[in-house]
Image 1 (cartoon, rainbow, N blue to C red):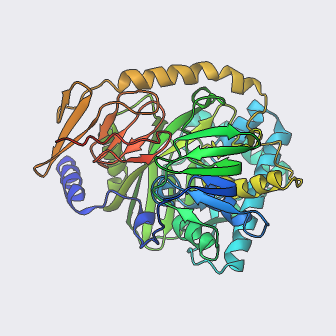
Image 2: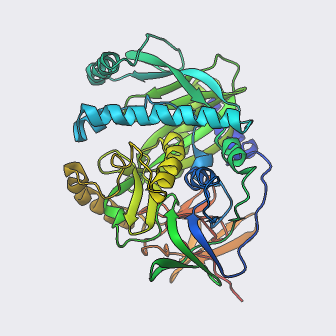
Length: 482
């Protein structure tokens, strides 16, 4: 068995694609901004949050623009599992603990509203994104969690969210239940479907380096141009700035490892109650498997985590075709940050691994704030809310950033280190990059599976040649040697 497993790893290393299954489609390309301009609303970030804001603002009288530092939907959205559900592992219980039952119920209703809005938009815009209804199953294989899962089940039933018994042989379970009327889809197809009939300008490979207040407007600087805007929506995965929000101490990052394999079984959507987190879903003739979730600061051995994922999939007698990772922002009190950050600057992030429902909902919330309309979720997700857990967890999150900095000093035997540079050779071609992340100076780690340079402090990522592909950094680490 051991030799079969080693053979599988070697074989997969050769034939599988180290990209998300959602990225295996032809994409429309957008231009790079090459001139100064002025708009009413500037959206920074081309994931589902930014695209959702663009979509919700399309029928207003506002002049809106979206800029993305790389390619649209090329990071967190495209690395997700593509689930639309309100049964979100132990997140509901965390919200009940951090706040109360009333806030938890309001959060559940926000997710159901988001799912219904997404369904309506898919029908209205005739978006072909492989939407399918499914039951969502939650389970535990740990004895001490059975009582917690039963209490969650009772809480849902007491509040008219019906649950049902179920079973599956894909995981070992001591207890599980399911809910109806949840969905799965292709998130990349959905995102592109939202913008197919939008006439607002969209720019790729356009990175905002700095934002300055100018009377009642903001000047947003790229490398060579300026964008003046009355409203600025920061919809990047992780905001590039530290002040004024002090984001690094108000959130942490969780990294997960995903695969997609050929699969001919029944349709399923399944999650575990808590870490070690497992998420499984089917997509056409594929099984998407997520596992090995951990704090990005606590474990920098990506190769080990990928291999453990491959072993889990191998135990199901499946061969991996796609292999990738994803990072999610976990807020201190388990609720997203959506709303007014300061003056006319807005933020949408911190979705605690459930970004698809919250991303789409964020666009509607931000539109309503800008237009001074009522929205029942504005206060729920207010980024400046006060909560004791939000305050208490600033200390461990600060420690995690320091821990990530220390772990980033770990050297890789296949990399040559000299001063502040790193050299890595693949197929007789040498790549040279800077050793530190431009965001906060943390030492970078090389991800041997995905061939990226990753920051263990705040999650910035750079491709093999040093181009930044994931915030908070908004600068590259490329070295142009003579």
